[in-house]
Length: 68
Image 1 (cartoon, rainbow, N blue to C red):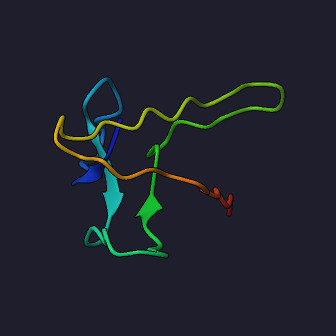
Image 2 (cartoon, rainbow, N blue to C red):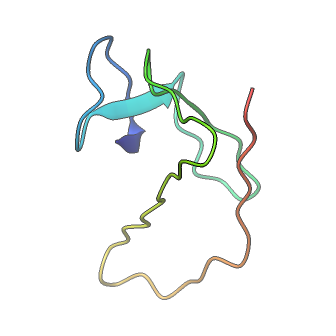
């Protein structure tokens, strides 16, 4: 799912949007995302893939995920 695209009910496959509200791309941003009615059970995993423009020369040194 794409955390920069708006979530649409019933859509949870590859490239479907997961974003709730507006996307904040600033430093120390907080963005809320959802899987809709899908869940991550105990002993299951999620994978986070970071995609950047080929001209980007920055780096990511920290990321955190909070479950609610």
